[in-house]
Figure 1 (tube, rainbow, N blue to C red):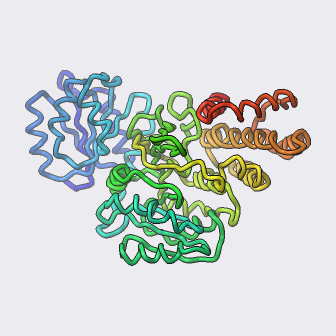
Figure 2 (cartoon, one colour; figure 1 turned 30 degrees about the horizontal axis):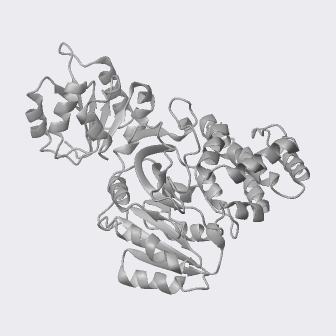
Figure 3 (tube, rainbow, N blue to C red; figure 1 turned 60 degrees about the vertical axis):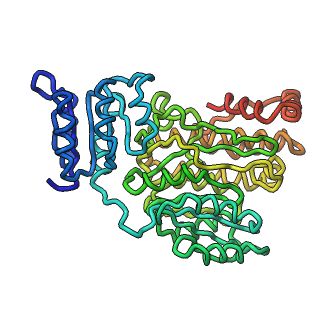
Length: 468
């Protein structure tokens, strides 16, 4: 039997395969996947299955398993390294120790009845693609760095601590720094040859640095770490390990915000609605049952397949803030499938006045913020080939919140009424982005007072509550 086979293990009912299993096997074979069926007849099947696995397989799949069978499956697979998909007839009991352990094990993916329609095609792609070759980095982490000398050791150090046995390439782009960023980056490259690479370039801004990193990345997957942020090393190690056999186009992980005066990072939980390890289609991300309730594909959560980004022709605007919005919207051009891990990977540092997301920076760069929003709206009018679901996600979860945030910034500037009316006229060309009704001055003043006196956490909660 070839090593690319999927071994599909199913319980029998009266000597016949359950209908759902028979249909799944047919779908996979039609999609070009090689499948061998192993019938689980009872407790004695565990030893027979272990003997069968003396021959290699690329993937294991199980169907129709209740809590008792899951416990047996857990014992039987304790020492396996093969990716495993478990098809549930109904959600496992919250008290099932095996099911809870599987949620934390990167080998296992649970698929519920409502998700099966997409699985034939996804799995046919997933386990027929080759894994990374030995010595090839699986993941390139790009670190755009401009005058970040004092921060570089901390951010890059969090990547190096992960020590994923050559799976991670750290690519520092010194973006025309005038401090010692370049020298510190070169020192890191000298200390970690083959792991850390440095590219020095004239200043092109955050977008230009990401463009350069994407063009030179060697890893099959690509993500960005800003120089003032860091990662959780154990979570990165788990991600890099899972990426060796990963074939979806986008891997989503959780992140936490680090704020001054708060002793612990604040977990955001953008993916809480998605099962841990779940595979899905990007065009379901805005679905009320299958998707996410807020904006989920952001720089801090997203690990893209490098080839998909390159094939999309992604090119971010140079010397402009807020191009991370371009990155996570235009980067979806060739992205079809995702996997969601609940690992808290990214540590996003907030509170610095110079950050583009600070209130002062929003006001100072309000023109660039609007320019990026208008560019994305214009791009959406050109992307008629996108599925309705993907467009819905970008419009409802990304563009509408950005536009509403922009109105909030305009409220705090001089002559806000004239500014907001002019903005609304420019947005009139993009009717798919719904804006809230015009707010009279007294209500805006009440909001401004609330922003001054309410704690940041409460303001964030109110903003999320107002978002669709």
